[in-house]
Amino acid sequence: MRHTGSCLCGEVTFEVDGDFENFFLCHCERCRKDTGSAHAANLFSSTAQLRWLSGKENVKTFNFKSTGHIKSFCSVCGSALPNIQMDGTLLVIPAGCLDSDVPIKPQGHIYVANKANWDNELQNIPEFEQLANEDNA
Image: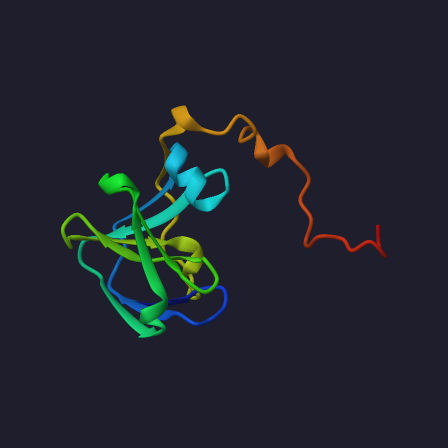
């Protein structure tokens, strides 16, 4: 299966050929810092191949204190991008950077002991199609 993706500004585009084996929502403190959100949403594959279509020179990779907590991002807009980990054996793709549909659902929440205190019962808060502008408020 072929998947396409890009960063927010469009400078970096890529393709992933292959299937995703896992999809996890990670609540660890590092992933929350990486995303600025409740959790990271990452797809994992040990067989898929990543190919940069444009902007490879804008891709920067950060390895937190050489711990293996790795984040790749666009140096222009800061968007999260795929990276290769585990000595080249694991492709990690932030689900939000894909432009094509994600073919699998998350398999679970991980590191929930580090979950943000405000990340509870979110299914019970109101949903809106978009942010109302001040004229409609």
